[in-house]
Image (cartoon, rainbow, N blue to C red; front, side):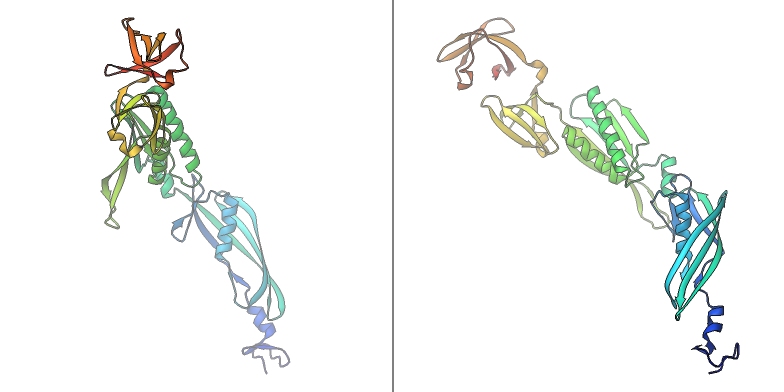
Length: 347
């Protein structure tokens, strides 16, 4: 066949022209002479196809990725090799060089391209929220019918900080812009609802208590018409503490541990262990604090009675003998708790 471009009649034809004329005009790749990319000046995330990436990657890597995304390889190319090089960066402009080689219809060809990548510094929506002190959740740390102790506040602060550090690896809004120290307790303002829930769960893991959530409408998204809410999460920790004495289902129990889902204690009149679901906290009554434990001395022992000295008026008090008292001896000091005119020895 006759090539209308060069007049050749003895070369392989590609369509209406010979292979040489085809390759002369052929482009392995197409690439814009200028590429613009938006990068957050705070976290280095970039805007791609209308969405912000959450990757905190080096600026040079962002430039290389922008080049890769904008290179289009012709369908006819096989076994292509593309080398990218940043020749220099002046301010926010990177001069780049692209070298491409590949096989086209059995012939190896190569070409080079120059490209300018312009970096537009801006602020992503997440960093904008952080700068403005944005928050989605408020954790209300409270105690039921008592004041929270300073050491409990210190422990809570530690748990909040530790949780935020752990969550920050996959949640940029894992931060606390404000702690409101109120008379009734602390309010922890948390950037994201996801992390806020995790903070509340970890506080409950340490202190026990009951969690309640209360969403509040704060505004409306004008573009979608949907309501924008903040979530208040209340954690009310128990009135009682470890070693306090509680009444549950008519039994007097000494608290031995307080967990996320249950209160564990020992019934003091029967030395029987009880596991009380935390959801039943409202049915638990505090009857005595551990600070009210007294010390007494055994003054007499018989098969029927154990006689102790009342630490208040130093009178003798007879207690019915119990198998738990068998190893006690006259002169031993022992702890007791006085509940509703009843004396219980703490063995």
